[in-house]
Image (cartoon, rainbow over all chains, first blue to last red; front, side):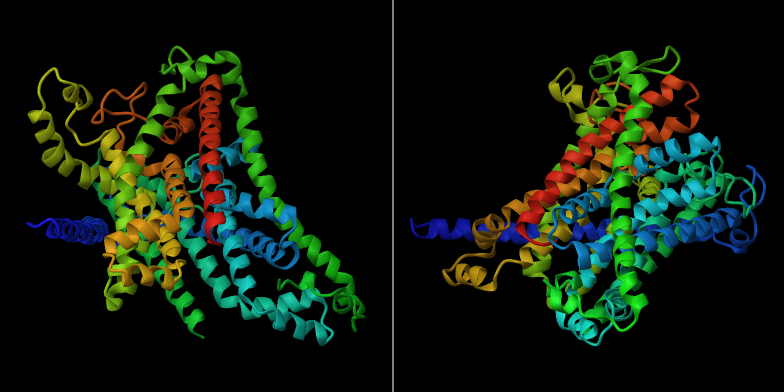
Length: 283
Length: 323
């Protein structure tokens, strides 16, 4: 190697190694995803029969399904989403339409972003101390409140983001026609941004439907089928947690089936939300 | 500035045709304001309720709560040091693994990926972020741990020199569960978050800046190292801290695979515990007042740690770009 050739070679090697590393890193991530999905499919599909949807969680050794857990999860998520959409949409609207650059607006925006990634188990502890402990009982509603508190920041954030994208001319046009500010927001701005807001709500739903930690000591669990949300309510994540760590093979099989069910739901909702967001951007 | 409230006063104050409409304007603003304030109250409520709930533990053990690693529900002695160390060690290790990988992925998606595959691979990485924590936990315990024990743990434990420093930090039960396995699972979980934020940051670099570097004859590596990374440095640090914040508070996956042993972690293969895993494991069964107070106090410690990390992350990212 000549004196001129040497640095060239080292540059080429450095470049090659760097590019190879980037490919490798992406490969590792894709491999991890494939491995997880593969395990879910192979371990979960065996337990996924009609019983899952028609029978409640069994005692060890007997036949059963996940009906009570699926129903409980669904109820809690729906109630949580109603609350979270209400709070999140209004809070996001305030940040985008009324607060903008005020100090208080900045504080709220900042704290909302922190709340967005705060450990979910702390939300569970919080709801336990303010709802479960004073009322002396675990309940599905407590679980819903915990989930709502996790979903609301997500919706607030996405709502503010999509509202900010709406052009000023839209607001001016509406107000110039004599519409009051509130009906401008309700019928013009929300309407224009509804696709983006729906995406945000779907992502929030995907996030809470797999959450386990905040339910451990709020909703607890329930072995039986029950629609009463003032009592401990069965839910998929906690059932999976309990069954997966149990010593019984049939419980573990149910846990895998439940995990497959949850992952499939979450991933489908996520993909649908992404596609919706893309369509929105295009139009 | 495109908010309704920012309109010139002449427009906003123009007489409204319906009296109800004008009257409701203020009401609507107050409604929105209350919703925003509710979020603030919730965050404040978390701190206050944890502080009140954990007070008996601070009162009983004082400073010892933070420096003692003894956690003994039978004798009612609780010290947070073990769980705090476990949390910090597992999150730091996770960051160590996730950092280079996620930067590699972000650079791959922005610079190297064939356009045809960009969307597919981008979505795939996002899906990794969407998989629920509990699924990671099950996969980690039943699939990853046995593989890890057989192909990584055993060979390493066999090959280290007895009595050496390496033996000391690799002792443990070769069942695949432990601090290191938990860190690897955590790394996979936080990697998509860091990668996605990094990718957004890299996309904010003006094309001219990168292209002029290429025009001077730089290789991709040199452009990234000397132009792109310095350009987004502040935000990149924020992205990393965001990942760290996630890793610190992650509960279910860690609970499955860390082995749940109290005290200071002794080696990377040994069982340990984190704050979140301790709370998840014990809170529902904690009947003694002091036990549950200690767990809530642990929660407050976790809150303070993650709040500092996340707040710094947001400040740094916010300064870089509006993400």
